[in-house]
Length: 425
Ligand code: SPQ
Image (tube, rainbow, N blue to C red; front, side):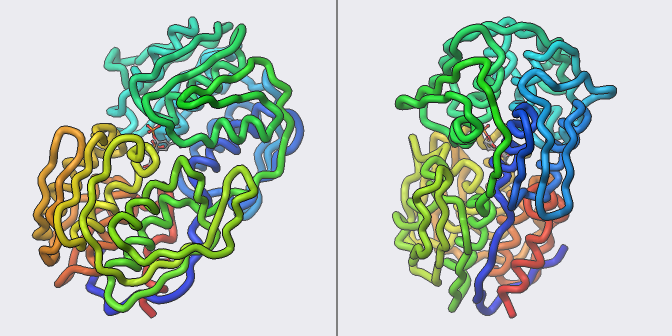
């Protein structure tokens, strides 16, 4: 797909529902009793993978393209799938669902695409095995396909070496079925949507510092869930509005959960013009309309506990840094290497091809901003966040930029290119 430089971006936009919250609504709705109605569900390939996996386990889920209605089977009501469970490209489905599968009275096999079969699963196999789960990597390489023979689990305390919401959520979901309490301590707090949603369904999940604890055997009751716009999808428009000439974009109804809002802090640190209206801070998942305008930006250091709050936004933050004066240093982000692609290498290679001054490091990258970008052929590596980040970069680069495998945006934002184009009119 070919992208050209744009003159300006103006207008309002509503981005699709939050991917992390959409996945969790399917999983908790499936193991709750009664009906769960999900409004604003993300109709992207990853969340549809979650939906199909739980349908295969006997859960009746209707989706009319607007509202998802889940007829929950109750905590102990999932059925043995007739076939292998295919998670597609979704790490969230793989890791969270494995926590649930580990405690069922049936066996299952979990497969995914090439990218999933390269992503590390030892990070969930280790704590689940401590809970007495029987989970193995079919090829013995600690990746999917996974074979999970469900059995009774025991509660544990797990000190996670990584700040990962997927590891934390996997263990907490398994903990719902375990004997006794289950808790997870992580180095820094990662996104807390599982904890919030569990409590909304009537479960008991407490948080103290970086430790989250669940009580087993809760009575979970179906709920109405309203999914806010995904800040990770809003991020592309935030950056586009800041770096494109003479631009102003308002993104409506964006989720600003404090465990996800690191990009807002970065934009402020860089001196970006960003304002908030219609802030709804009362709900468990707060939202706001966010407006950005073309800004003069300066580089900054992004490190430590902010990293889990913006991990998925780092590719597009790297684009932002190319348009800031001075140096931007991103560190403590080695997790980028084990996403849908190695997002450090892929950003460094593609941005270098566009003329950026960027150096990859073991745990991040250093960008010396201010060098104009020019066209190049971009290898997205079928990673949705890479494709969307470079569509934004291309709009502010000289010449025509080609993005390969650009359709991978279907994973989290099928209408992304249409929405971006509408802001150019
Ligand atoms: O689901 P998947 O493929 O892992 O998706 C990504 C993404 O960029 O969309 C990561 F590649 O988001 C993860 C995120 O990085 C979604 C997620 C969640 O919903 O719990 C948590 C983060 O991953 P992790 O490994 O830090 O827990």
